Every structure is written in structure tokens, then in C-alpha cells.
Image 1 (tube, rainbow, N blue to C red):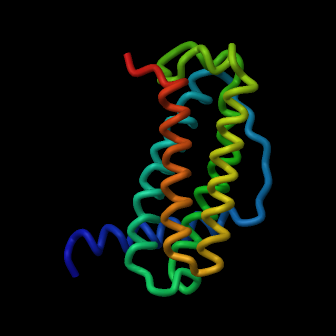
Image 2 (image 1 turned 90 degrees about the horizontal axis):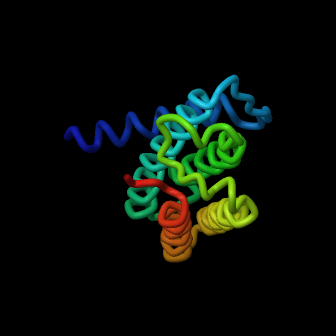
Amino acid sequence: MNKGKLVFKKGIQHLLLISALSSGATFALEFDDAASAINYRQETFGHIESQLKLLKRSIKKSDNLTSGDALAIVRNISNESQHLIAAFTPVSYQGKTKADADIWDEWPRFEQLMSDYLGNLRDLESAIQSNHKKQAMNALRSAARSCKSCHISYRDFW
């Protein structure tokens, strides 16, 4: 087995374990300080980004999306994404963050962008459940555009 396939397989196994541990679990995130919230956001966004890449590969290589790993991956992404907004606590615009302070000044718009992103993930899950590969790829692109839109508006690159 080549290194790429091994990394992909280990990534899928990791996601399935996380999904099994977190399925059905509901919890409220609370952060003691800005650094904790910022750290959680950055780690979660990084993890979601790597999962989206795995998902794209899974969709592309699968003939039957419902029997593959794609459904578990998108559910894990959705689960992690739903908890992200709680990590944008009012004081977490300070410190080593990549988030622009405009998030808190334009909170309703930020919430809407996050809501749009979550809606794209629901569409993606539905396409995977229906085994519509083309729709799944379109929904994946929409979710990625949602990420990019938010980053353009609210990520501080400097």
C-alpha cells in the first residue's frame, strides 16, 4: 500500500472513531479565556479542512456513496461545525487569532454565513445519502465557497 493510501485510510479510521465517540452527544462549549476559544477554533477549522479534503477524495473514488466513508465524514464535519460559533466569544477577538474584529461588529451577518455553510453541509449529506455523486460534488463546492466567503470577510491575513 502506498503512503498516500495509508494516510487516507488512517484518516478515515480516525474520523470514524471520532464520529462514533461524538454521535448523538450534545454539549455546550464554554471557554475560560480568549486563548482557549481561539485555540479551539483554530484546531477545529484545521481539522475540518483536512476532513473536507478526505471527503472530496472519498466522493471521487466511490461508486456507491452510501456504502463508503463519505457519510461518516460529512456527519463528523457537520457535528464539529455546529459547535464553532460558540467559540467566537466576545473577548476572543484579542490575542493570537486570525479572526477579524468585524465578526463581532457584524454578528448577524457572520451568523448568517455560518448558517449558510451548515445548510450546504446538510445538502451535501442528503446528496451522499441519495448516492448522487454529481450533486455531492456540487454541494461540497458550495460548502467550500461558504468557507471562502467567510474567510474573505472575516479572516485577518495580516
